[in-house]
Image (tube, rainbow, N blue to C red; front, side, top):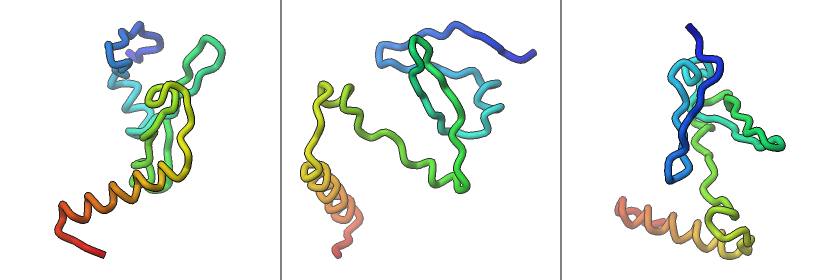
Length: 94
């Protein structure tokens, strides 16, 4: 029997669990969440290459910065710092 509608509890961290039948039917581990008025639409996100789905929201201005934008220079600086740290962890230099 297919689950058509289900009440889900939202955790204190804002997470929900999608029923396994829905996840299997979607056939992907990535989803697109989009507000439409008072409805939250969840749809599967498929790309030609599963590795392309590795991009996810790593920064959400409303969640992470009280709705304020971040200057591009700060984002670039943070990315460079992250790359340097990764190289150092793996014993690599340029």
